[in-house]
Image 1 (cartoon, rainbow, N blue to C red):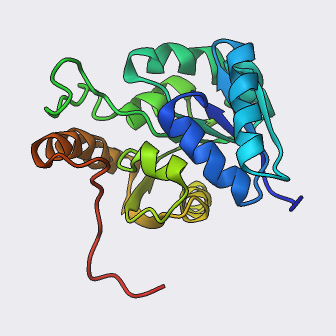
Image 2: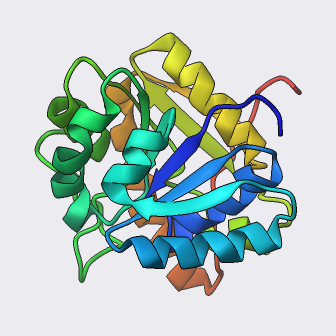
Image 3: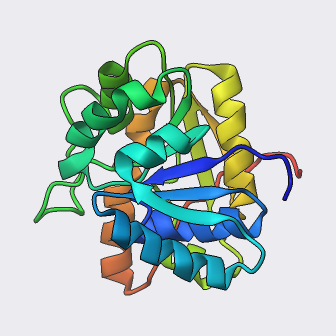
Length: 221
């Protein structure tokens, strides 16, 4: 197994979390899935390990996963976002936390409804404190396409105020088969989060599954 950081995915049994877990497991990263119910996380981890032979994937409860991970990804519904961050706050001090949460407000999930604080990622930074380097990413990637295992024709906007944390997150985005694009400061995460509602509306109107975004004009890698 390559000497790579352990990735903890809080909400790892959900669609986005499990899709990212599968991609990173296949790329050689050790992964720990977090869930409110440890047995559910262990079952999901077994399924991902079977789909990624030779990988190291295990399940924990959310707090256990946060403690185990070197990088912690938040892939939970916005309704649970703040409470889960409060629960794991002490366990993620000194770490990079990648917030993939989107402030969707049912039933009008195709309408942009950003929080008064600006974005979910900015809320995460406030709750977790200065000892945690928060970045924002993966809001606009189709979970289904991640799980299908094919090419993901989508860019990932990565926002953050810490350069090294942002670079680390961009490497993970590339490892997941997407193209990472530096989106600037953490405050700019509001744009990526808002785009999710726009894309949901596009999916519905055009009857497609997994519309994404591409940033044009960038030099070839």
